[in-house]
Image (cartoon, rainbow, N blue to C red; front, side, top):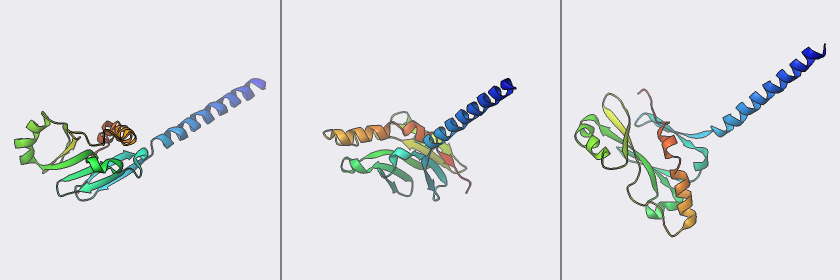
Length: 151
């Protein structure tokens, strides 16, 4: 009689540990959803970015900018939208020269992810420099969340 009780207790403790681990992991994966209805794509930004960035949208580009570093430019990354023709004539060559990666395409457009080629923070302000560096360290993860939506 004692053996089944011990096994049940061990199984219960194991189940609780698994559930607790899932709950912790779920909290770590929370993010800020960005939805662009104009160009039909989404991104997930780290929760640590909350309140620290602005979005600047134009007809063919969406830039994500560090609020703390706006005086120095502050751009962290941008998503550019190219026509397929322009990408074929200019984009592929440009991607070989600068920090530009093709991250998606649909029937008529190519989407690229670019990071700045120059310094976008105030180098003399250690706090702002560190904030920019922390945000920039998460760019590859953000790039991986890019997804096109159906129009």
